[in-house]
Amino acid sequence: MRLGIFGGSFDPPHVGHLLAASDAFEALALDRLFFVPNAAQPLKQGVLVATPAQRLAMVHYAVDGDPRFSVSPAEIERKGLSYTVDTLAAFAERYPDAERFLLVGADAFATMPHWREPARIAGLARIAVLHRAGDEGAAPPAGIPAEAVVRLQTRRVDVSATEIRDRVRQGRSIRGFVAASVADYIARAGLYRQGTA
Image 1: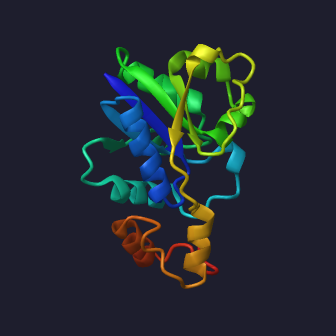
Image 2: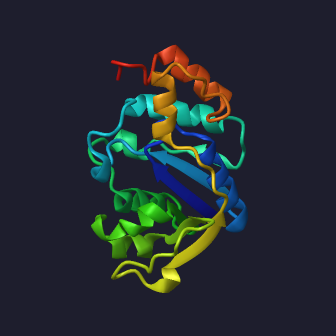
């Protein structure tokens, strides 16, 4: 079995996340891809807007009905700061015979020297770096062997969670930026409006 593990804030999950996941699923010939919303990301403290439970719900809405994708609440249930190495260790324990791939964007890959136990991460999963057209491929961080890294081309989708949150604050439509079910949830929950969490 070939598993993809795609972590992130997903605040909110948007079409860029879904397209990157689809590209990786096909390029790596995965059997299943898990979206793993983090509880509190060490390098983004104070940046998240929706609660962990709200972000988990949005990811469920975003992937609902797609048999390629699953959602893991592992980091949110674990509480505290979300360290990728702990998540991968949990996946290795649950799926010991699976070939595991950690999906990361090129920007996140560049920060890996600041992650907890990067060399152990590379031992628990191959690192699939998603490069968009025009991105420069950074060399693997110290302690990460080149053979542990797979580089994948993905399409450039100029949409960001920050832009989506700003559009909601400004009262503008986010249809087309996120799945309709996610847009409906954001509206029902009153997320990202001025003066709300």
